[in-house]
Length: 142
Image (cartoon, helix red, strand yellow):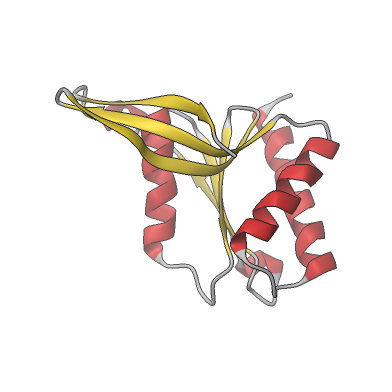
């Protein structure tokens, strides 16, 4: 499946979830339901993917966790907050750079309008990551 097709399925599925359930649940509930719905649409989804980071010989096990990793190509950061902050997008951009992936989303389910709660992010700086900094998936943790 092409990356744009994956992103379309993610957006369509998240929109339906937002429309059907609304904005009253905690992040982990949206995360679990979105995972199941994306799987039912034929996508491979990993939840709470632990990533190790190594910097200048210092290894940091499980330095960060990706909420949902779709088809090993798209990172989803799930939120249920009044308003996302710029740091949320920066977090996903950092994850994209460290994993050398190109596409990610911050999806906030607490907005009245779905379009106000989704932000698509692209990694255009993968070559700027320090050669002294590396990230390696540590496997999926549920």
